[in-house]
Image 1 (spheres, rainbow, N blue to C red):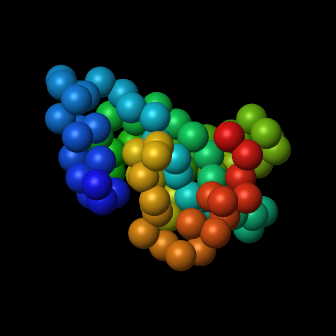
Image 2: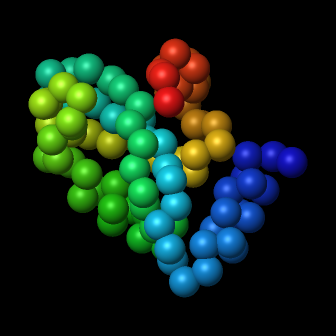
Length: 91
């Protein structure tokens, strides 16, 4: 089963837009890139990704400057750089 197939199953299983765990590749206000997990609604993903900018990251106290990509947990990122960072990020 491909990542796209898994993503589609997760969207269908979410029913009326219930939040699902996503992992997001982002850059904070100090330039550090990281993978952070959020509960996001697939039907509102773009709006929710945009709404993450400016939020405080609990781990560091820094703020989210830019969200590059969010994917459902268990799915691979499209970006090679995000995939590499995801492999070394503890869950």
